[in-house]
Image (tube, rainbow, N blue to C red; front, side, top):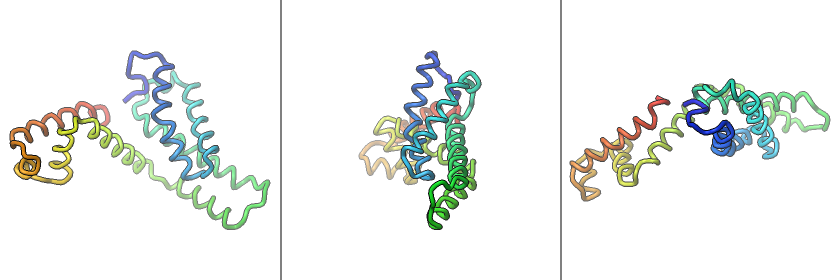
Length: 180
């Protein structure tokens, strides 16, 4: 999954990435820096850097990990700076809270973040299936029901169940081939 995967212009590709990731990254950042304005500024800085270095990132393979790690690192920098700058007096409790946030960000496992993003991508792929196909797929693969049980529950034939699962697997494989 490269940053540029379409025939669109750089501006269109960048705008699309910005629109998709900005809200997610702000929410992620805000769990550590608490101030929405600071979280937005951190994410804006990441996107500004991305825009300035766009040619370098055109062929980047995992945009999710890259963007979230970039925001994570900016949050760490922000929290370190906050702890070092004590222009206004802060209470011991505020100091401990800031240290805890910094520690939790530093110990955030990069692989865990990738797993979280991967689960999100898989969920989005499943959600993109046609309604009936998704319903049958979830009953089969998530709830673990047998084809006969699904057929009885939905009042359809087992051949329909088999066909819909085949379609779901084919569509998911196609949609996730660059990720998995």
